[in-house]
Amino acid sequence: MTLSPSVDRRVKARIDLPAYPLNQSCPREGTRAVDNHHLWRRSIAPSFREAWWVELSDGTVLPNRIGVSTSAHQKLTENKAWIRWLGEDEGFAWLEKNDQDEWELLSYIDYLPTFKEEPDAA
Image 1 (cartoon, one colour):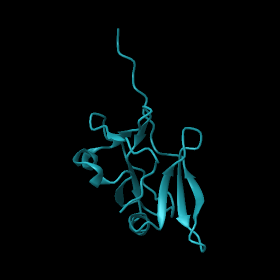
Image 2 (tube, one colour):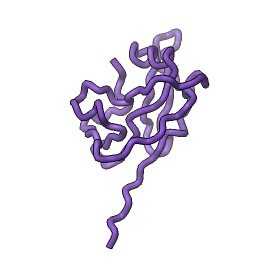
Image 3 (cartoon, one colour):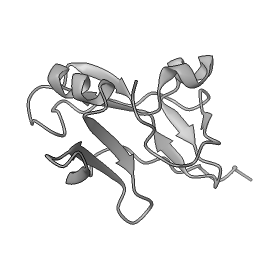
Image 4 (tube, helix red, strand yellow):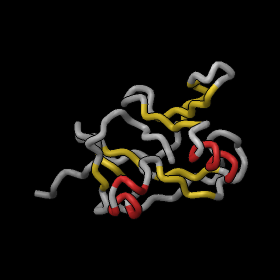
C-alpha cells in the first residue's frame, strides 16, 4: 500500500479539476513511464480513485498522479520507495530505504503540474 506523500490526513479529492498529461519518463529510472500511480492511495475514499488532484487542509492543491515504470511502481506499493511532499519550497521528492532501513532522499521531482485557481470573472 502506497505511503501518503504528506503528514496532512485531512486531504480531500478534487474530482472537479481536470486531468493532466502524465509524464512520459519515470522520475526515478528515466525509463518509459507505463504505470499511472496515485500519489494518495485510492483506498482513502471512493473519490480518490477518480481524482487527478487533491487539496490539503491548508488549501494547497497538488497533483495526485504520476507516471512511473513498472519496477518503480512496485517499489512504491511495497513501501521500498516513497514520493513525499516536502512543502512549497521543495516540492515532491523521491525517497528510498537505505542499507540502515532509513529513508534517503534520492531526487526531487520537479515536473509535476501545479494548479492555480483562476479568479472569478467579474
